[in-house]
Length: 385
Image 1 (cartoon, rainbow, N blue to C red):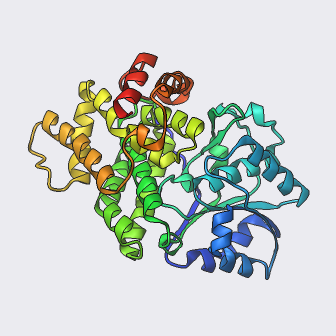
Image 2 (cartoon, one colour; image 1 turned 60 degrees about the vertical axis):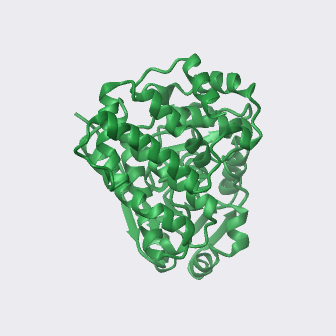
Image 3 (cartoon, helix red, strand yellow; image 1 turned 90 degrees about the vertical axis):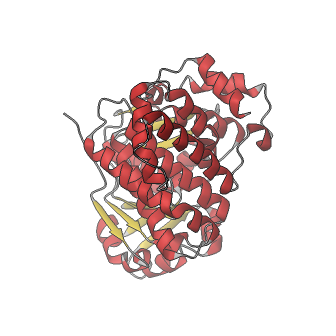
């Protein structure tokens, strides 16, 4: 038995963010609260859609969302949305904006207190109507029942509940064409991590639908990430990345991620490193640790040729697994992503603190195919320092 939940509606295509305004209004009503970030509003990226929406409804924009949004930011957005008497919430931006939008809609609709919603299935709903428009190809947040917030003590806490899946996701590849190369790279690796961890998760809800979606995501992402990074206006590559990110999102929304994310969160929370980059820093070291597990080694071997088409899939699992890990390590370097913690001015002595913090991510660690102790986490951090 397994459960599979996803976003009710999805629209994909160039200029769909502008051409779907009637669907947005139908979903969200006359008082639409928009959650975004200052960078997007300054670039004018959301302006055409907002201008068209304003012809038929009232708009209030909250654009103070930062990378890895804080609890304070969430509560400020919630307060503004309540004062506006919002009838629906539109999240427009990267994963951070969409995560805040999800929880604003939940808090408005359910009247739950924020401290009661952390964890898995603690959010009871209902929520206000919700539409999400991603501007990065990485988090897949537009199709996941997950939102991550950084608490006052720098711990990343998650809400996981089918109630925060949106009514509609609108995927417009044109919104991603001006994404800087470094962000394209880190968010793209983030999407690949989602697919890899969803496929290998030992969560009881790991299922054939998620596995299929993981494979299709890796085909799209692996074949397009370099082009998207180094030729950002290649619309075919951008489309593949956005589709791949969405498919990976659907996969891990139902077969949850594991230790790569658990070890990435302290890097982001303590040192303000982006989520995608945090994932890329620990990805291959966690995979090397997990490959001690024979079933996981076999799974990595199965995935390898979908990402690196030149690999001979007639080779044995050991060969394919090792080449998969080595290939991902080379890919991160070719994309010019930092690959050492020291390169980001993270001190060596922080490895101990990060290992301790990673152990708090129990909802993720239980899904890892190889049990990780605090000493293991410490050794992984040391290996990438």
